[in-house]
Structure formats: C-alpha cells, structure tokens
Image 1 (cartoon, rainbow, N blue to C red):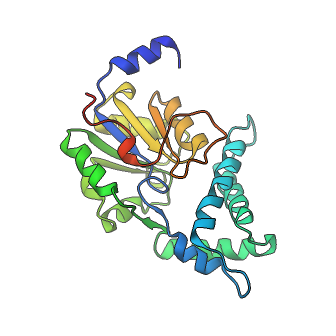
Image 2: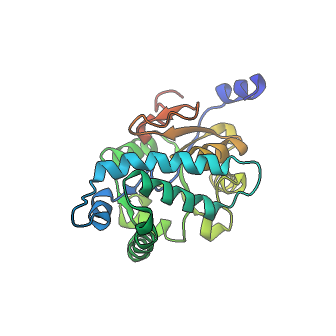
Image 3: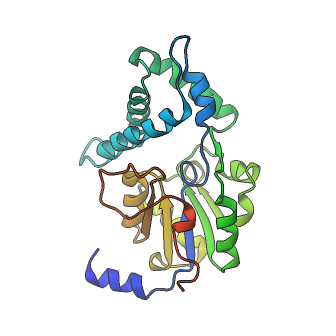
Length: 238
C-alpha cells in the first residue's frame, strides 16, 4: 500500500465490517468429515483434518497467484486434493470422498459449525454501530444458512457469489457490498480465510483485510492475521 493510501486508511473512520462465511463465520464439520473419511484400519481424526486444510490453502494460494491459467473451480479442486492428501487419504479414494463431500454439502451445508464467541462478537459490533455484511463465494445457500445458524439477524446484507454473478477475488463483489452499505473502501474492513481469494480480492477493492489463521500456521504469506473475528477491528478505536 502506498503512503498516500495508508494515510487515507488511517484517517477514515471505519463504519462497516465485512466477513467471508465458510472458514470465518461458520467452519467445516470436521468431526463428521473425520467419520466419513475413516476406513477400517485407518481412522482420521478431526484435528488432523483441520490442520491438514492449511496445506490445501497453500495450494490454492499458489494456484490463484499464477499469472495465467487461473480458474476458480480448478483452484478449489486443487485445494481439496492437497487437503485430503495431507490428511493421509490415499489418492485413489479422493474422488470417492469428493463426491460424498458434495452430496452431504448439497443436503445440508458442511460449513455448519459456529464457534464460541462468534455471535457475541457480531452482536457487539452491531451494538457499537457498525454495518455488517457477508461476502461469500457460494452456491446460493449462504443467506439460508445464516438464518439457520442464527447469524442473519446481525447483517445488513448477505452477498452470495452465485446470486450476484461475480466471485472473489474479483473486486466487484466487494464493491456490491460497499454500495449496499453506503460506505467507501477506506471505511470498511474484511475478514476471510484464504489469502489469494479473500485478502487479494479485498485489497483490489481498496479494503483492508485480516486473514483468519486460528492455529497460527498460515506462514507462507506476509499479511496481518487474526484468530477470531472479534479481532477484526477494535470496537472502541473510532
């Protein structure tokens, strides 16, 4: 960021806080997936799956940061294969597990675990006067999921890439959020869990981002990181 842009960010009063959904507000059901991916003689545990996901994030970051040949759907495929391989799933089983993953996800989203302190943090942000938005790459289900998980009440707008027709890291999806909230990029902050999709997309839209890194293992990029959404922006700063 240039000195001029940094100065603008420092002077602007933050009015809006934006969030990715999966991996930021609601997390994968690693316990369920551990049961699904286990086989007789090979037990997969939830923590192993969660930590192995960092390898998937590193893979999608490398893929999405290439100068050419980037396709978001292919990036997610690369993520899944690298993640399961890092968790000890044999390569010949990955397609089977991928099909099962998608089936369960279509029936009831797998990003379904709202971790402790999330609702309290959002409630505090609302009470402090901030406008809140979800900006998610999804398949059209995010608003419904937010209602089921008791999160929708906190948000002024929920933006699903499938619904609006543009996905992160394209900055246009962030601009939709800014327009709906009536704020400038300098007046917003964003939290998300994948650097090349969330942070670079937010940066392209002029929004300062914080990278969710709950286990402190996102060590291949130099970016400001937080472990929980409550750390996105100090409520008494403004």
